[in-house]
Every structure is written in structure tokens, then in C-alpha cells.
Amino acid sequence: MKISFESDYNNGAHPEVICHLLETNGKQSQSYGFDEWSEQARNKIRTACKCPDADIFFLVGGTQANATVIDGMLTSYEGVISVQTAHINVHESGAVEASGHKVITLPSHAGKMDAGELEAWLKAFHADPTLEHMVIPGMVYITFPTELGSVYRAREIEEILAVCRSYELKLFIDGARLGYGLASSECDFDLAWLAGHCDAFYIGGTKVGALCGEAVVFPRGNAPRHFMNIVKRHGALLAKSRLAGIQFDALFTENLYFKIAKHAIDMAMKMRQLFTDASIPLRDSSTNQQFVELTNEQMKHILQDVLFETWEPIDADHTLCRFVTSWATTDRDLEALKNALATL
Image 1 (cartoon, rainbow, N blue to C red):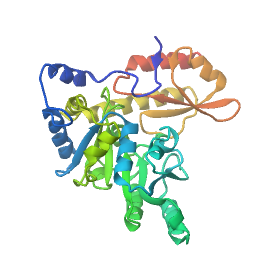
Image 2 (cartoon, helix red, strand yellow; image 1 turned 60 degrees about the horizontal axis):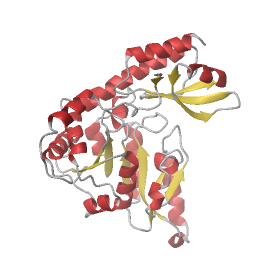
Image 3 (cartoon, rainbow, N blue to C red; image 1 turned 45 degrees about the vertical axis):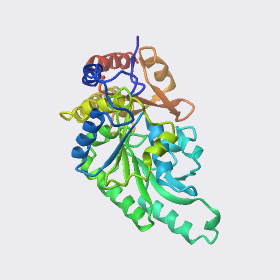
């Protein structure tokens, strides 16, 4: 079978996660989030976030988390502001709109939102005399790291949060790859800082060592009223909630989550050097997603030996391709890529 760099969720779970699932398998527990491991995981996450009052809910996947949190935090007539390239706008099959909330888009700057453009849009919106007939913005959504591998600096998030506060908007951070963003060399803050600079975020497990699962965090105990009912209404409430709880209990024991993320980043930087040595141009990314500019002939040639994702055409002769590392990436995997590049 070919080595795959297609995504960071094409392997199973980290062995320590699997071991924890196996060692607890014979034990009975309560359901719907009241099992002992889910509570242990919540307490470990609260400690890591330095948020002792945080409300934490475990959902299965990122689309579920995004659609449920956005629906739960907005009123029926409100929408959410994101950049054009945001996952909720491009790759979630209208899940947010299906709950009645319009996704309002702003320009994307390598995947990031510009606070000045956000403020200018809001100023123009509130000056419009016909706004009673329009979708009212109630939330700003950003991803960390972004879908294009870029990383917000602390100053950029502070500026976006300041605009949100000025216009009484909530700030929600999609953390499907949160570990990889925090492990990036460009990141100048930690998990606790992030928790203190938003109204809600989630810690991605699916892409960072778990079989499945995302931990939704309302850092100041500010979960919407009856949020568990909202989760269930979205079909997102696990009866066997221990499945997610046990995994996050393992991920937040002895910093496993952050060790996994650092390994993937280290592998991505080694990968990046392989492309540089082969004189193949790359887009800027300090995360586990590397975006590579290949000629169509190079792309076809490399695909004979390793798998990766074709992202989008650049022109008639070139394609932007994505190569992704994870907890499971090995030096042997990178050697296979090196050998493929050597034959170009």
C-alpha cells in the first residue's frame, strides 16, 4: 500500500488512546457524558486551559461541533461572519445554514481574517437604514490554525476580539487542528491564553490522535442555556459518551496531546525541507499541512509512489497540492517521499 499524506485522520488512534479504551472496556459507566472518564477529561482540560469553571462537551466531529455551537449561541435571526475560505463556508455542506444561520463572508488573507476589514464591514452594516431586513451578525468564526496552514498571532486575535466586543459579537474558534497550531513555531501563545480570548472554542481530537471526538469548551462556564438539549437536537449526543471521554482523558494525560502535535510539526518541517531540496516551491505554513506547487507532470509522477491531496489548480500546467503529517508519520514515510522526489 502506498504511503499517504492525504490527511491527519487517515490513521487509527494513537496507541496510548487505544490502550486506555481497552483497559476500560470491561467497566460499566453512566451514559450521556456522566461517565467517570469524561469527568476526568473535563478536569484535565480545565487545568490545561486554566479555566476552572469551563463548561465542556464532547462531540464526535468538527462539522457537528461547528453547527451545534453556532446554532446554540445564536438567536434565530442571526448569522456568523467568517472568511471565504472558512471550513463552515466551503467544506461542511451547508450544515450551518441548515440550522437557519447565514454564513456571512469576508476576504481571506492566506486563510486569516483581518480585524480592520471586519470592523469596516460592521460599521457599514450598522449604518445601513434597511438592516431590519437583513441577517444580523451575532458571531465571528475563525479557525486556528487556518484551513490554509496559516497561524494567527496573539495580536491578531486580540484585534478581532476587540472588534467583537465593540459590536457585542461572540468569538468562536474552530480548533479542529488546535494542537498543531499551538505547536507551530509561529504561535506566540498557549492554550490558556487562547481560552481567555474567545467565547467558545473546541479542541480537535479527530485530527490529533483520537479515533474521533472534539472537546467543545465554553471557558467561563458560559455555555448556552440547555446546551445539552441543543446537542441532542443536532443528533450529536453520544449515548456511549465514554468513547470520547476516555480518549480525551488519555490525550490530556502527561501532555500527550501536545507531544502528538509537536511530532507532527517536526515531521512537517522535515517534509518541507525535502521539497526545498528538490527546488519545488511551497506556500508559507508552519503547521502540519504543507501546500506544494507542483507541475501537473510532477504531480502524476509522485502519485505513483505516495498519496496526497490535490487542492486546487494554479494554472493550466500547475496544481497546488496538500501534504499532511500526523501522530503516525514516520521517518520511513518521509524516506518514501524523498525517493519519489529524487526520480523527478
